[in-house]
Amino acid sequence: MSVIIVGGGMAGATLALAISRLSHGALPVHLIEATAPESHAHPGFDGRAIALAAGTCQQLARIGVWQSLADCATAITTVHVSDRGHAGFVTLAAEDYQLAALGQVVELHNVGQRLFALLRKAPGVTLHCPDRVANVARTQSHVEVTLESGETLTGRVLVAADGTHSALATACGVDWQQEPYEQLAVIANVATSVAHEGRAFERFTQHGPLAMLPMSDGRCSLVWCHPLERREEVLSWSDEKFCRELQSAFAGDLEKLPTPVNAVLIRWR
Image 1 (tube, rainbow, N blue to C red):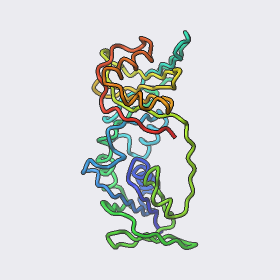
Image 2: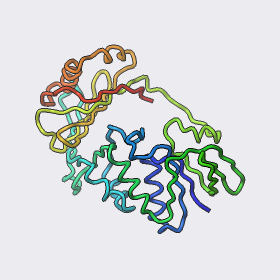
Image 3: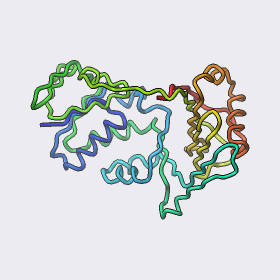
Image 4: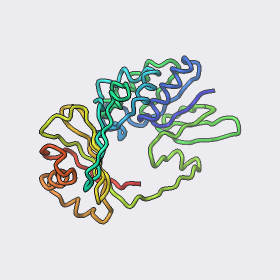
């Protein structure tokens, strides 16, 4: 009896690889994904970046995944934490914890193809991509999943890894609850005039926290929180205004900022 995973993003793909590695291919895995990673249209492998703690990277190495992702990552060697308007700050350094890095920032746009290359070679893993779930039938002992291609899969475990608003979870009657933070988050890739040298920044301001994580090519991944009532104001900023406001939020702790790249607003929840 197999495990059926619906969704081939970071969560679904790494789960399939972990099961394959830890069971030595003895436990069959069916991975269903609607979008082939080669199309560059997968919503889980876009221009965003994610931060992984050192322990997470070690776990990914254990299942043979990190070795394929390492050159998509930038090491976080130092984290600088400060509160605007207060003199104190905290600096966390990897060397203080006998680590090469506190974590890694992984750029997702190339990750999908690398994970799927591993999946195609993983013992016990069968890929159904591109394909979609047409119907799910559950019994006390197993689940049957019918695909749009007409194939029917039988498994003991069905995993919904198809995103935040999971269509599969909804179809199976799984309830979820959303709690608004009453904030929005600005996500952007920015660059500073001086190399970040592996430094990450977390800054608390009157409007909300912001974080900058080191990326490749001298860029940083920015997440900047604002109250919902500032939405229209933030949307109206030009690139130059955006950079001035960001510089002001850091009160001179950052070097001069060029224009941001791909700034996006999302609802924080």
